[in-house]
Length: 202
Image 1 (spheres, one colour):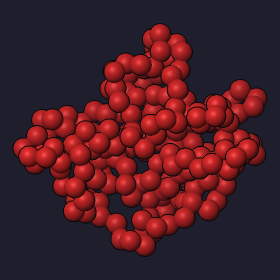
Image 2 (cartoon, one colour):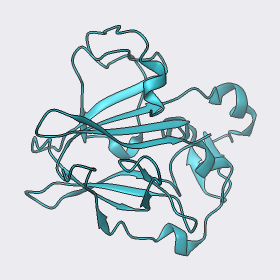
Image 3 (cartoon, helix red, strand yellow):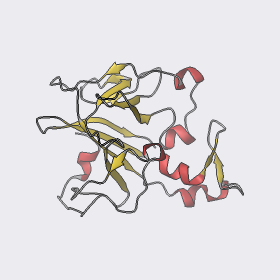
Image 4 (spheres, rainbow, N blue to C red):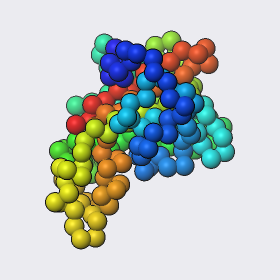
């Protein structure tokens, strides 16, 4: 059972996924709304991956390994966190879905990574346990951290905050990219939903 399954006790529906929560800045321009989503949480940003040209089916390439027991899940290795990239099969355009060295609360405020770890390559193409390798992608981030309360006194006069690695970042960007949970799922041609990534990041 993935993290998102914990929330799916009831089947409440919203009109769309536009609930006012802002998603990761690095995915701006690469997503679209989902109509009538089930059990959208008030602190959840959820979207479907889509290129500017309208492509909605992707292959997945990653750095990491498959979970020992849940063979559908991509996880990090002892050397470094996972890196997950979507690839448009038609154009070969690549879209970063998650970089565990950069994205999420822990990467921004708790863990420091070397230049070698940050430069790792997503070189393995993903296949689910049934051999499917092309999916429609849905992404969810959960933003349960009250950044305004926890970090307000650390924002400088220019509206920037210093991350654990010394990088200065706009506070608005920090709140969008510093999510505490990430879920990535894929829809196969046969209509089966496969959970690809499920990470707690705080």
